[in-house]
Amino acid sequence: MHYFFVIMIMGDRMKIIEYEDQYLEDVRNLLTELEEYIVSIDKDELDQVHPEYHEKMALIDLNEVNKNNGKCYLAIEEDEVIGLIMGTIPQYGEFDYLDYKCPKRGEITELIVTSKIRSKGVGQALMNKMEEYFKSAGCEYILVDVFAYNKNAINFYGKNGYHHRMYTNIKRIG
Image (tube, rainbow, N blue to C red):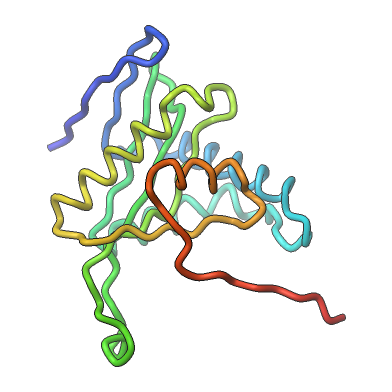
Protein backbone atom coordinates (compact mmCIF):
# COMPACT_ATOMS: atom_id res chain seq x y z
CA MET A 1 0.00 0.00 0.00
CA HIS A 2 1.38 3.40 -0.97
CA TYR A 3 0.37 6.51 0.84
CA PHE A 4 1.25 10.15 0.63
CA PHE A 5 0.60 13.38 2.36
CA VAL A 6 0.26 16.85 0.91
CA ILE A 7 1.90 19.99 2.22
CA MET A 8 1.75 23.56 1.02
CA ILE A 9 4.96 25.12 -0.28
CA MET A 10 4.79 28.59 -1.78
CA GLY A 11 1.10 28.10 -2.45
CA ASP A 12 1.68 24.99 -4.57
CA ARG A 13 0.67 21.47 -3.71
CA MET A 14 3.46 19.01 -3.16
CA LYS A 15 3.04 15.40 -2.17
CA ILE A 16 5.51 12.98 -0.67
CA ILE A 17 5.16 9.37 -1.74
CA GLU A 18 7.11 6.18 -1.30
CA TYR A 19 9.28 5.31 -4.28
CA GLU A 20 7.57 3.62 -7.22
CA ASP A 21 9.41 2.07 -10.19
CA GLN A 22 7.82 4.52 -12.64
CA TYR A 23 10.06 7.21 -11.10
CA LEU A 24 13.39 5.41 -11.60
CA GLU A 25 14.64 7.83 -14.26
CA ASP A 26 13.73 10.78 -12.03
CA VAL A 27 15.73 9.23 -9.19
CA ARG A 28 18.65 8.72 -11.55
CA ASN A 29 18.48 12.35 -12.63
CA LEU A 30 18.38 13.68 -9.08
CA LEU A 31 21.27 11.49 -7.91
CA THR A 32 23.31 12.57 -10.93
CA GLU A 33 22.51 16.22 -10.18
CA LEU A 34 23.71 15.72 -6.60
CA GLU A 35 26.92 14.00 -7.69
CA GLU A 36 27.67 16.73 -10.22
CA TYR A 37 27.23 19.28 -7.43
CA ILE A 38 29.55 17.31 -5.13
CA VAL A 39 32.16 17.18 -7.91
CA SER A 40 31.88 20.96 -8.35
CA ILE A 41 32.64 21.67 -4.67
CA ASP A 42 35.25 18.93 -4.12
CA LYS A 43 38.45 20.85 -3.30
CA ASP A 44 40.41 17.58 -3.29
CA GLU A 45 39.16 16.73 -6.81
CA LEU A 46 38.59 13.08 -5.87
CA ASP A 47 34.89 12.76 -6.66
CA GLN A 48 33.75 12.01 -10.19
CA VAL A 49 30.67 11.22 -12.21
CA HIS A 50 31.70 7.95 -13.82
CA PRO A 51 30.08 7.23 -17.20
CA GLU A 52 28.10 4.39 -15.56
CA TYR A 53 26.98 6.48 -12.57
CA HIS A 54 23.65 7.59 -14.03
CA GLU A 55 22.63 4.08 -15.02
CA LYS A 56 23.83 2.15 -11.97
CA MET A 57 23.88 4.34 -8.83
CA ALA A 58 20.13 4.59 -8.33
CA LEU A 59 19.80 0.81 -8.59
CA ILE A 60 22.61 0.32 -6.07
CA ASP A 61 21.06 2.81 -3.63
CA LEU A 62 17.55 1.39 -4.00
CA ASN A 63 18.89 -2.13 -3.45
CA GLU A 64 20.52 -0.97 -0.20
CA VAL A 65 17.22 0.59 0.87
CA ASN A 66 15.38 -2.68 0.22
CA LYS A 67 18.05 -4.84 1.83
CA ASN A 68 18.25 -2.74 5.01
CA ASN A 69 14.60 -2.15 5.97
CA GLY A 70 14.73 1.33 4.47
CA LYS A 71 12.54 3.76 2.62
CA CYS A 72 12.87 6.06 -0.34
CA TYR A 73 10.47 8.98 -0.40
CA LEU A 74 9.92 11.28 -3.36
CA ALA A 75 8.68 14.87 -3.31
CA ILE A 76 6.41 15.44 -6.29
CA GLU A 77 4.95 18.72 -7.47
CA GLU A 78 2.81 19.03 -10.60
CA ASP A 79 3.78 15.46 -11.62
CA GLU A 80 7.51 16.30 -11.41
CA VAL A 81 9.89 14.69 -8.92
CA ILE A 82 11.62 17.63 -7.22
CA GLY A 83 13.39 15.84 -4.38
CA LEU A 84 14.13 12.54 -2.71
CA ILE A 85 15.40 11.07 0.51
CA MET A 86 16.69 7.56 1.11
CA GLY A 87 17.28 5.96 4.46
CA THR A 88 18.16 2.55 5.82
CA ILE A 89 18.11 0.75 9.15
CA PRO A 90 21.30 -1.30 8.91
CA GLN A 91 22.28 -4.13 11.21
CA TYR A 92 25.40 -3.93 13.31
CA GLY A 93 28.38 -6.16 12.63
CA GLU A 94 29.10 -9.25 14.67
CA PHE A 95 31.59 -7.52 17.00
CA ASP A 96 30.32 -3.92 17.06
CA TYR A 97 29.03 -4.48 20.60
CA LEU A 98 32.63 -4.73 21.89
CA ASP A 99 33.13 -0.97 21.80
CA TYR A 100 29.67 0.44 21.11
CA LYS A 101 26.26 0.27 22.81
CA CYS A 102 24.58 -0.42 19.44
CA PRO A 103 21.34 1.52 19.73
CA LYS A 104 18.96 1.01 16.83
CA ARG A 105 19.65 3.72 14.30
CA GLY A 106 18.49 4.91 10.94
CA GLU A 107 20.89 6.26 8.36
CA ILE A 108 20.03 8.88 5.79
CA THR A 109 21.94 7.81 2.71
CA GLU A 110 20.72 10.40 0.18
CA LEU A 111 18.86 13.71 0.33
CA ILE A 112 18.54 15.87 -2.75
CA VAL A 113 16.23 18.65 -3.83
CA THR A 114 16.57 19.80 -7.41
CA SER A 115 18.43 23.09 -7.74
CA LYS A 116 15.34 24.62 -9.36
CA ILE A 117 13.49 24.68 -6.02
CA ARG A 118 15.99 24.57 -3.13
CA SER A 119 15.38 26.48 0.11
CA LYS A 120 11.59 26.26 -0.24
CA GLY A 121 10.90 23.63 2.45
CA VAL A 122 11.07 20.51 0.30
CA GLY A 123 14.18 19.12 2.03
CA GLN A 124 12.61 19.81 5.41
CA ALA A 125 9.43 17.97 4.43
CA LEU A 126 11.46 14.99 3.20
CA MET A 127 13.56 15.00 6.37
CA ASN A 128 10.44 15.10 8.55
CA LYS A 129 8.97 12.15 6.66
CA MET A 130 12.12 10.05 7.05
CA GLU A 131 12.47 10.92 10.74
CA GLU A 132 8.84 9.89 11.21
CA TYR A 133 9.59 6.53 9.58
CA PHE A 134 12.69 5.95 11.70
CA LYS A 135 10.75 6.75 14.89
CA SER A 136 7.95 4.36 13.91
CA ALA A 137 10.58 1.64 13.33
CA GLY A 138 11.96 2.09 16.86
CA CYS A 139 15.20 3.88 15.99
CA GLU A 140 16.89 5.82 18.77
CA TYR A 141 19.30 7.78 16.59
CA ILE A 142 19.71 8.94 13.02
CA LEU A 143 23.09 9.14 11.31
CA VAL A 144 23.96 11.05 8.18
CA ASP A 145 27.32 11.45 6.48
CA VAL A 146 27.81 14.89 4.95
CA PHE A 147 30.56 15.82 2.51
CA ALA A 148 32.82 18.28 4.37
CA TYR A 149 32.76 20.85 1.56
CA ASN A 150 28.94 20.84 1.36
CA LYS A 151 28.37 23.80 3.68
CA ASN A 152 24.68 24.08 2.69
CA ALA A 153 24.00 20.52 3.83
CA ILE A 154 26.03 20.96 7.01
CA ASN A 155 23.99 24.05 7.89
CA PHE A 156 20.70 22.29 7.01
CA TYR A 157 21.43 19.32 9.26
CA GLY A 158 22.68 21.61 12.05
CA LYS A 159 19.39 23.53 11.97
CA ASN A 160 17.63 20.17 12.34
CA GLY A 161 19.48 19.24 15.53
CA TYR A 162 22.25 17.06 14.05
CA HIS A 163 25.79 17.41 15.34
CA HIS A 164 29.24 16.05 14.54
CA ARG A 165 30.24 12.78 16.13
CA MET A 166 33.15 11.72 13.90
CA TYR A 167 35.53 13.47 11.55
CA THR A 168 37.35 11.97 8.60
CA ASN A 169 40.70 13.61 7.92
CA ILE A 170 42.58 13.47 4.65
CA LYS A 171 46.11 14.43 3.63
CA ARG A 172 47.64 14.27 0.17
CA ILE A 173 51.07 12.61 0.31
CA GLY A 174 51.93 12.07 -3.35
